[in-house]
Length: 346
Image (cartoon, rainbow, N blue to C red; front, side, top):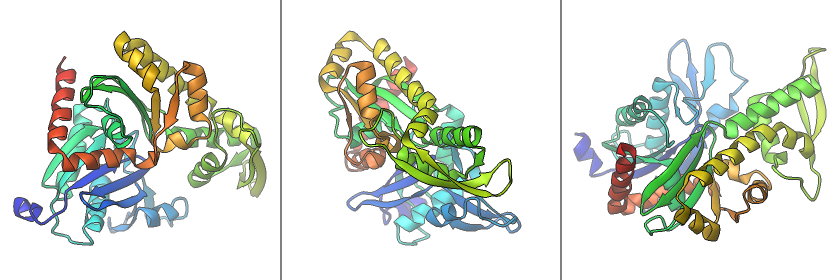
């Protein structure tokens, strides 16, 4: 029956991210872009909300409802919730058709284990996908950013998502070097939370930390200073309090995360063949993912490496757009999967 229903279902490309899930339909473009969050009633075990509605519940739910993130560090942490979330998003992409059984391409971090890969595949199949193809996020991001990965030349992509930062050098459709660093957007949010807690004795929520990162986050001094008010609970007095925080403070909070990403890029540049290094000198490094929107991160990385660094157009959707392009070119999908399988065996 799944094979029959797949004939009447749209093929999907999915960026199953730690922070957000994006879905692309062949011929239609991106149709779903929502937070990877599920609100579940602990008494009935029923899903109360998924995506944007569930995110609004973070930190505000009664005792019988819990809002959780099924993904952690780019992999599935809660199998049941991930399955329900995928089923909801696939149904939404098909306008509520519960019988849809599409072929699916999913972007995954470069260094996840076989067990973690199987968890993603099983969740997608249980969410009624007829066929599931897993492709490294960095390759998808490179395709989505418009890099010529099928040519004999080095293309370096740094995809900074919610749970992982994937660094890869791609040539002739294959991965020459790949590193998945579990320091990304969520780690930045946690760093901001801990910094404000230690310096200002103020406890803030997850959503507040994310908003601070978006409004004030930077990796290199700004030409015009920024500041904003932040509300939370004073840890000494135990009452709500509002303070003002500046971009200098946020940059200090993010310093360790930024340095970890820069160091990982340096290691990648040291380990690739010299011919590909020469290509990257000419072509530069491309940043994608939500973390690429951190102010002046490209400038800081360029100063640290001495290479040109650019931010991809619409960096948030690079992975899903790259996977979407493979929906229309299954020969490219087969070539990418075969080349990277050979790299893994080697």
